[in-house]
Amino acid sequence: MNSDLANRDRLIVALDVATKEQALDLVKQLSGAVSFFKIGLQLYTTLGPEIIAAVKKAGANVFLDLKLHDIPNTVARAVEAAGKLGLQMLPVHLRGGREMLEAAVSARAAGLMLPGVAVRTSPNATTLSGLGVHQAVEA
Image (cartoon, rainbow, N blue to C red):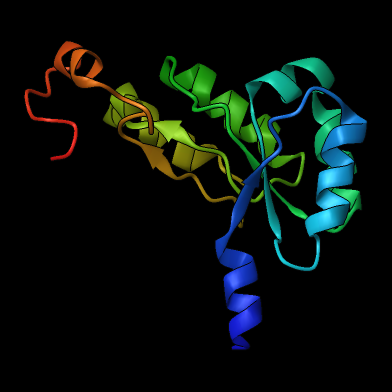
């Protein structure tokens, strides 16, 4: 595999912007270097499936970062609905438990990756302690 392509597919750029125009401008600017773009809660809540369709139309892969965590049936239906949007990645929160995770996997469309989130990327000692993790953040 071409090393540039491998690097291009390993990067995920967050579209943490307020408007469709800003998001698509960023996708256009980085399209040669990045193939995956993360749509988070703010942008998805504002624009819904419309932003996913627009990013896909621009030729990019979509990582819809909603970190699903709910009862198994609700997560399964959300995974099923998201799969119909043509996403490539949709994370689920591991703290939802085995039954929720199995429901998510059973509902996913072919090719949809469901990465598991164990801990947010910005925890501090207080946050971790509240989750029952009694180690330093560095650990």
